[in-house]
Length: 243
Image (cartoon, rainbow, N blue to C red; front, side):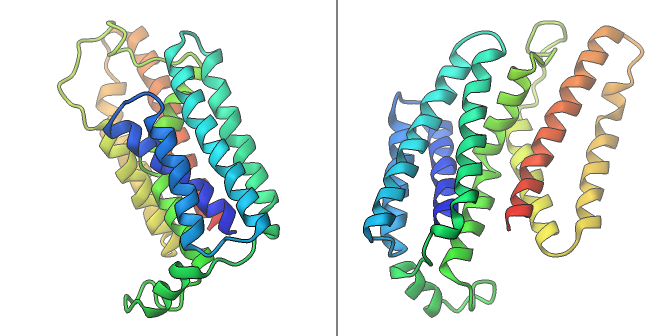
């Protein structure tokens, strides 16, 4: 599972870098470099591991380039290219996870020496997968949701000029917080509590989605909210299944 965890970390670092500094070629380069560095720290230095890490680095580069290209071109079809890259890469990594050796190296020795109760006795493979799964809930989760919305031609009525612009900009932060919260609760065996978060979000959005004015816009807003929410929850639940 070490290759899969490193792939998720590479995706996450790429998108986090892009959210901080939108410099051309920088985010995907940082993500690819992170893949190689983390692989070395995990002791994945055999010939097969080096080849696998180089492939993962190339996939991370391709992910960053296709995401930029997908958002930079109008219409729904360009957004489907990075989604296909993500799905194919993740599926292939899962299928090949049995071929990956156990991680160790400096990372394994650090985990053996750490005194934190949550990490005590944790194997390096598990740590990489856990790190990647939670990291993907941040910027990568937002990117995936936006790609799904764009690929379906679903736009936010507020940003399309059909509704007055809002001063609230917390959606990009609330989404990651929601996904991390759901994943943490699910891993802790509190799946019912995670479902409460889903229900609470629907209740908070109900006044906005039940307005009697601008019914056409309300329908579009409802579609935007439902599709975006389900895509966001699927990112969190998908990570839970991997873990």
